[in-house]
Structures are given as C-alpha cells and as structure tokens.
Length: 181
Image (cartoon, rainbow, N blue to C red):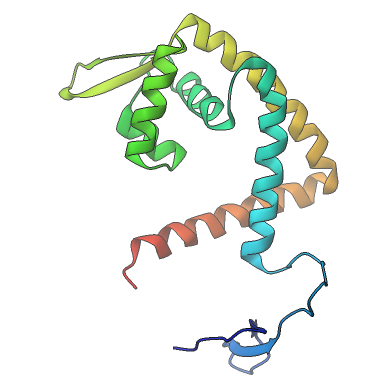
C-alpha cells in the first residue's frame, strides 16, 4: 500500500509493454494554482455537481428537487402498478433509509401514495397521484430543456458513444462496489 504525503498527488500511467498501470507520485499543483483536476473522479464529480445544481435551480419554481423528480420519473415509467420501495431504491441507486424518508415526504406533499403490495404483505407499493403525474410531466420538460443545453457539447455520434462508455463505467463501478476490498 502506498501513502502519498502532503504536496504529492498520485498519477497512473499505462506506458508499459504489458499495458499494466504504473503509479507515480508527483508534486501537487503549486499553491494558488486553480486549474480544475482532470482525473476521472474529479471530472465525474464536476459533471454531476454542475448538472445537479443546474437542474435544482430550474426545478425550484415547481417545488421539486432533482431526487424527487427522479422518483416521480421512475414511478411514471413504471405505470399504474407503481413500484415497491425496494424496486424504487434499486432503480435510483440510493440508500433504503434515504428512500423511506423521501417517500414519506413526497406522500405528505400529495405527489405519491403508498399501498400494501398484493404479492407481499410486508412491502408497500408506491404509485403516482394525479398531482404527482402533473408535477412529473412539468419537470420532464425542464429536464429535456436542460439536456438540450448540454448535448451540443458533443456531436450526436459522440453523445451516443459517451453514453455507452458511461454505462460500461457505471457497471464496472457497481461490480467494484459489490466486491470486498
């Protein structure tokens, strides 16, 4: 295990004949240098943070947050049967405790309803209410408009390839999360 001390950053390079990566400790950026980091995690974080904040501001007039919209969208996609809280949790890749509180608040707002699941008396099935469907439809237009602002950064072919590659990385991250260190 390698620990990198103050003033050093870790960089991986693939310049070996066997394509294995080599770790190099390098001096960190000088104090006061403000160029954003360009590695995978920092770039992914910048994308996510920028998208989330832009979406949050655009949803604010509707009284929704991005995660609430994600719940409404997934329930709309599921149709009239709705989803169990476990299915909803799996779709939005969240923590079960987070979903429980989120669903309770959204039910209080009148956007969703919970009913016992016919197939499992322990489970609750979550469905959109008419108000929730209206909110979802309005927010979906906001999401489409935001995507229309972002997509021109890449050509249509580049965008398609980007999504395919991002899906592969997401699956690799899921597998890494399931393995024990």
